[in-house]
Image 1: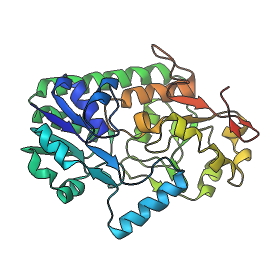
Image 2 (image 1 turned 60 degrees about the vertical axis):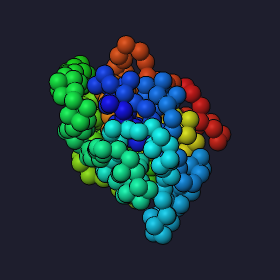
Image 3 (image 1 turned 45 degrees about the horizontal axis):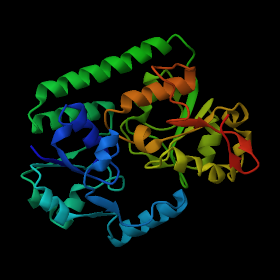
Length: 310
């Protein structure tokens, strides 16, 4: 079976099911495992995504209003790859290629089977794994993978649960401010944290900055959607310009972190296990086989106008 995955989490799932060798094409965001970066790239953003969060938000809103695409899909390349299965998503019209993008470009006719994953909760992520497993005839592997993920997350929870649970706010965007929803709250709970803003299964939504100030959490995790660790760091200046930033308890106590949102906090794939490990490390100092600090997250410290490692 030949698989083209236009969704980073879909690529992770295919690999997790032991079918990585069947992948023949990927999206521009697929990067896990690293070797998939060598596969042909079938999508690209329709505008510059290296600008600030505020500029990205403005352009996305403009394009949604005018009906312009957020992504370009290389239909000619997909046609040459001759996939048996095309994986996309229908959970968010902004974060990745959707069925509407597929229909607009005619890709739906390029593969006998198209799967559109939708995951607003951890259960939804597991259901997506089972759906992909069924599509590629690896049902048992899918059941096993889900069981393994559940067991690993439960083991982390068992280890940190005896400790005091700190309050947490996770930001999925910085300009405007978005609190993290969907499966994020469940991952915080699994790592023995108390999420102050955001609802399980609800789309992330813009909130007033005053809501964060009022929550005044013990920890603030900044993991903008689609931003790797380096890009997340750049948002420090945006936050520092907000009224009351330096009065926040988390800022005063050195408990603000910037994280790789793209790979770990916004992706509905197999890396949610690693995300729970990361949150447990941030909140409780709990470390797995290796430390994620410096790889998936970094501490924030204000020094002039720079974010520095501590």
